[in-house]
Every structure is written in structure tokens, then in C-alpha cells.
Image (cartoon, rainbow, N blue to C red; front, side, top):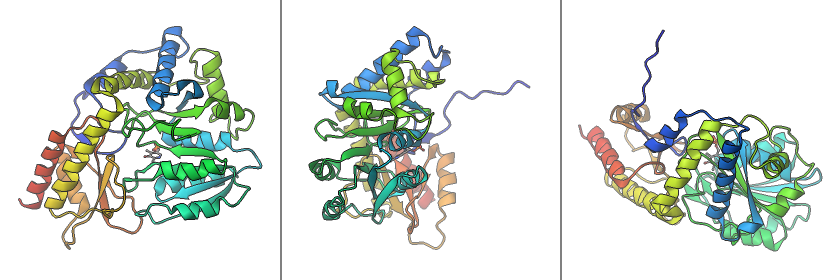
Length: 370
Ligand SMILES: *Cc1c(COP(=O)(O)O)cnc(C)c1O
């Protein structure tokens, strides 16, 4: 049978990964690449250098490692490779992705101290100071943008406390890196994790780790997994000019390179942040005008990545119905992930512009007042 192939997007993804990509990012995937050929490996090296330059001006201190799989695989690679057998990690958890790190650490038989908060609250710095009085703790991990709600954790303040006590500092910046300006050397981050299909606007298939060279070196021999061995993956890329240990997602890597060029063309992270910020403001204000309440209190730092809304207080409201209606109109939104609240989320990232948000608001308005 000759299957019909659809090449056009039927809707805009207003979800924080996978997200809507540019036509060129999708187009460059038409070509096949050899995973161990020099031309391809040079592309990988170029990407690794660009990622470090995107993260900091102090490029000599850091190195980038690309890892097959979704973003969680890269988080698990760091947790499973950086913490020695007699180490102990403090994980700050105020959302689904903090909780996932706790789950990973426990599964890997790592000694964990969990500092848990409600999903709509930011962590308390004095609690973190108190928890770090435990001299056995060697590592601390926290999520930057908790994609569960869209809140932005204060990694600068937390990092100051973590580094004052000499711990290794791990940040899951999956949904913020490339979309929120930061300098990882100034933040003194030891391991930062992100993935191809978030703010860089590539397609899903691999994650990446930006880490201090000395910390990567210190991971040698510690890994609890062969496939997710961060040191071995890094060392192979370093020693063999960008070679991945096992089959790499070649098309995805090529698309990511295009996405990096487009980020530069847009004006870099600061310009992209501004676009996402405008999207988010337009969305939050427009939705409030339509009668939807924000889940996060005004005092909680809201990221420009994703926004969470309460279900309206109406017996007849059906999220599924709204979802289906908007999908027909060309937009895919996201169910909520907050445990105790009836809410839904709308992503602000990807190849999405304020005009798109305006069109979405019109579609929601038409749905509400037919
Ligand atoms: C997307 C995301 C991840 C990784 O999720 P995957 O589904 O494995 O790609 C991890 N942490 C945060 C904060 C995220 O937004």
C-alpha cells in the first residue's frame, strides 16, 4: 500500500516539547548521514562548541556532552554518573520533574535527601541551608523552570548556598536553557541538563549536558549504567572528534544544528527570551480577560515558558471539549500536571509568535461565546 504522506503541520503545538519547529529545521532532516563519518562528527563538534558558547563566556571551563534519548535520559545520566557510591544528594522538589529526579536517584540506589514543597510554591532558602548542615551531602539538584506549573526556581540564590557549602551543583534547566538568559560560570553550575526539543527549538531525540571539565573528569569510573555513562560518552566525544559511542540520532542532530543557527539569527538567547516573554504576557493577560485564573500567585516568579490556568468555575466546563475544539482550530494545548488542582497548561515556546497567541485567544473567545 502506498501510504499518503502528510508534510504540512495541521496544528501549532503549544506544548513545551516537542514544540512547533521552523520549516527549515524540519527540511534539513531529509538527508541521511553516516554516524561515524568525519563530516558528521565535525557537525557534532561544532554543536558542542556552540552550546558551551551559549551557556557562558568562560568557555574553557565547560564542555558539552550529547546523549541519546529524551531529556530524562540525560538527567539520569548525570545522577547515575556523578555521585560516588558513598555520596548523598539533596534534591529540591516542587514539581513533577523534581519528583522524577528523586525517583531516579532512589532507583539508582543513591542516598537521597528530599526537600519537598507544594507545586505552586518556591523553595525556602533557610530550609536548604538547614538541610545542608548534613555534612554527608555531596551533591544538590534542582529544576530551574518547573514545567509542571511554569514557575522559575531561584537558582542563583540556591546556588550561592550550595556552593558556599562546597557541594556539587546540578541544575535541570531542560525547559529554560536557550530561552532564559543565564551564564553557567557566573551561576557556578557544575552540571546543567537540557534537551534538543525545548527552547533551542529542535526536534526530540537527544539531550545534552553542559558541565565543568573538572567535574566530568571526576565522573570517571562512577557510572551505574553502560548506556547512560556520562564520562564514557564525553571521553569518546573528546578523544574521537565528536564521535558518539552508540548509534546517534543523525537527523535530529542535523535539525538541531539548524535550530542553533536560527537562534543566532533571531539575536541569541536575549532576543528569544523577549519573544517568549511577549508570548507569555499576551497569553496570560488575554486569558484573564476571558475569565481564566492563573494557578501561580502574582508573587511567584513566572517563567516565559509555559502558563497554567485553573478550569473555570462552571459545572459544564470540559477540558477535553476545549482541547478538541482548539485542535480543530489549529492549536494543541496541554492538560495540567499539578496534583491537587483542576488546571490546564499552554506552552509559550517554539516557533510561536504573539500573532499566534492572538489567534489562539480569538479561538478560545469564540469557543466560550459561540
Ligand atoms: C521536558 C523536561 C524534562 C525531560 O522530559 P522528557 O520527556 O524526558 O524529555 C525534564 N525536566 C524538565 C523541567 C522538563 O521540562
